[in-house]
View 1 (cartoon, helix red, strand yellow):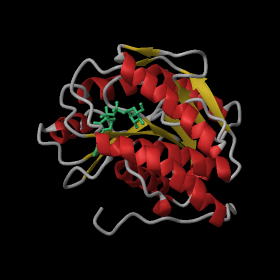
View 2 (tube, rainbow, N blue to C red; view 1 turned 90 degrees about the vertical axis):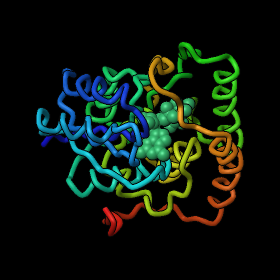
View 3 (cartoon, helix red, strand yellow; view 1 turned 120 degrees about the vertical axis):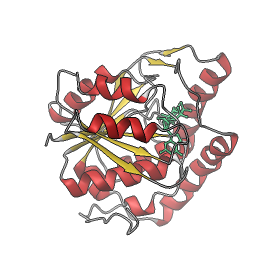
Length: 253
Ligand SMILES: Nc1nc2c(ncn2[C@@H]2O[C@H](COP(=O)(O)OP(=O)(O)O[C@H]3O[C@H](CO)[C@@H](O)[C@H](O)[C@@H]3O)[C@@H](O)[C@H]2O)c(=O)[nH]1
């Protein structure tokens, strides 16, 4: 077993899943890989099962229906913590996050001593390729909005390409993460920051997917707008005292 595992949530990623798996296992640093598939009707999980015969470090959790990106990651994080991984990564299946940069995120934590490394689109200008201008603007100003409301000094708080050390995931209470979409990404970083962990941003170039479709909806976007305010208000009533917790997977897993 490696000390690093990449968690990739999938829903209808038949066109991307084999290529992303092969790419992760070809990188210069060894990573294990966990796919959390939500019963994709297009048969994504079947492809993963076939590849598991070829790659012993490839794992699959199948859930029964589309339960959202946030809950998929929480499930994957708990799975990874139970197995004892030290560096746990978030990445999309669609190549919008350059898989080679997993190694840079790892170095930022393992060699530079940060607790969280965020693959950031906005730390050196705007590094987004092939997104429509309205989506770039929305994403960029979402970052500004989050910084203004929460005070969290992160240029790309909705980013979904991240390395978390096990220490962070064991400390922030994963059972209390309440959001499922963009707000999930903000909430995870906000809690890490409030607990005093060191978060660094590593510049990456985000390229919109060329295969398959985005699963994000207007509801998920609204969740982020109101979610940020909720996070800030709740933080006044919460005490962020680091405490090591052993968190269990739900009985159904
Ligand atoms: N298991 C599971 N996976 C899901 C679900 N919804 C989406 N996914 C998977 O989650 C990944 C991201 O989904 P996309 O639909 O491609 O998201 P996006 O709109 O491009 O959003 C990305 O960028 C946002 C910031 O701009 C990020 O906030 C977000 O987390 C994600 O990385 C893909 O691998 C997709 O298959 C779900 O309900 N369940």
